[in-house]
Image (cartoon, rainbow, N blue to C red; front, side, top):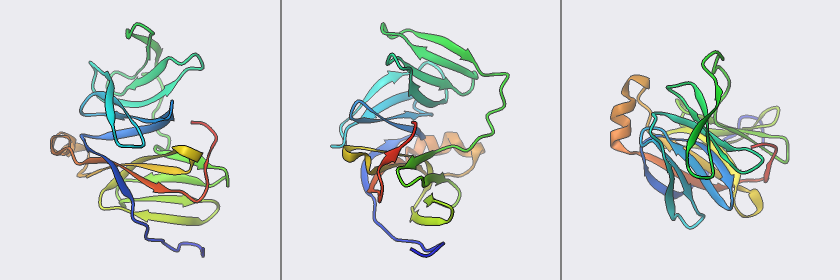
Length: 193
């Protein structure tokens, strides 16, 4: 495909009703994500069935991942802490992040072609680049994050939500316009996460 050319592909809705979804991860054959404003970590299967795996007592559970031993890590955005969920469900401080500066790109994943997918909130799209724009998925709302996973690791999961600026997050969260969309990707997942 020529540089900068956009392809219009229709995405399928997997999950609706999110307050402010973020940080998709494919783990144990399900898509896991954090819902900032609902203060929840959610897991959803390919069939759309979802469950709240961890209701958090803190605001803005920004992102998630797992330690090699399987314990869940959650970034508590407002507090600036990396928390670890123990096997008994207790949340313990794993690292204090308050002294670090959070200024890195968000919402990216890499495929086996060494192309990078990235979310673009204000332009309502998800873009695949590999030295040039390879694919653009236009959306009706902001794309906050993306992740490749699913059977064959070639399903692109898009975390989307209306975006009206930081000052309007509570209003947008009450509207619960967040969605998880899926689309078949041209190449499967590679790298970490």
